[in-house]
Length: 143
Image (cartoon, rainbow, N blue to C red; front, side, top):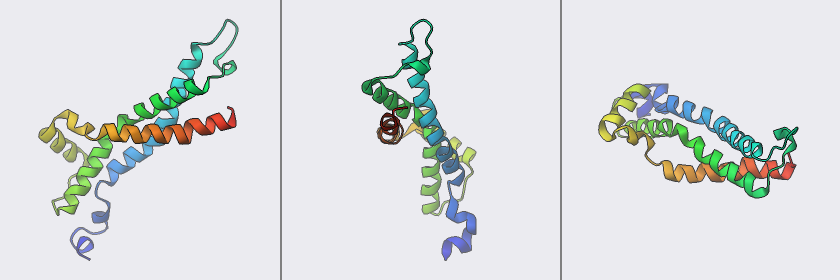
């Protein structure tokens, strides 16, 4: 009732741009960064005349690749912080701000590091997700 009357349909999607940017980059980052780490680890084992395609990593090396890839995939934490700030402001009934205005507000209030609030717990979540949804399936499939 009140949200639609006062803000229209857009009132239900505060922080939507930040959510789109964070979510859209999540899995591509997670998979891509893990694959980059895997290729780096494989390159350490390449012998003359071989390619990285000929190298099979150990379970430990696969797990380490997933841990590093998952941790690095939190590069987009500022988008998550922007989404949360926009949604918190909307819940308080504050005027809507676009993503740039929200970022400026956070930097003014908490400095640039404010854009990385909550990164440690999210890093733990991303590592877990990468291990169980990227690394484990790769190990099971034997690829």
